[in-house]
Length: 167
Image (cartoon, rainbow, N blue to C red; front, side, top):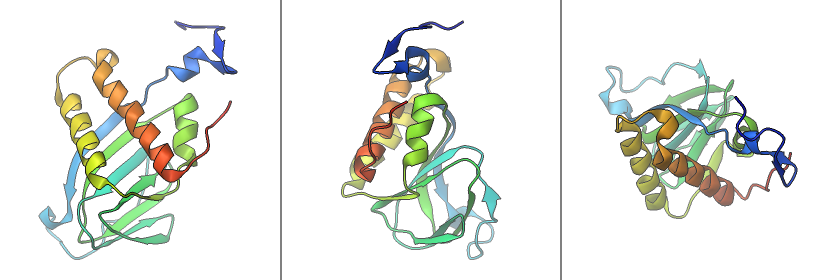
């Protein structure tokens, strides 16, 4: 059922504006915990948006065969369908999400790497999202998690210098 069918704001349909991303996975990744700590992670095709906040300097990330030396003042933003791998050492906090409509278009405009001045702000935001995701409330009513996801997307867009997306 379409809740706000035929209602538009600034040319955008309300249904499209209110489509919340769905977090498919979230947590902390540490390549040092793998059995093989030296070899690259196998290349894979992403199936969702992968937003990763490295916790240390070192290692290398590959997105669509472009090399990115990993620093603790960057965010990696891979999109669905991109080829991904990393060379250890690599530790990060990550959020993997699916998105549609307006928010998907915003996420698709983000560069693969966003350099950030205050990683601690993102640490707090990622930690809050992971904590909220672990609370056993039904996903469709977890308003705090939805607000944190929107805050993350807004902050990514600002730090990337992405223009506002119109319909």
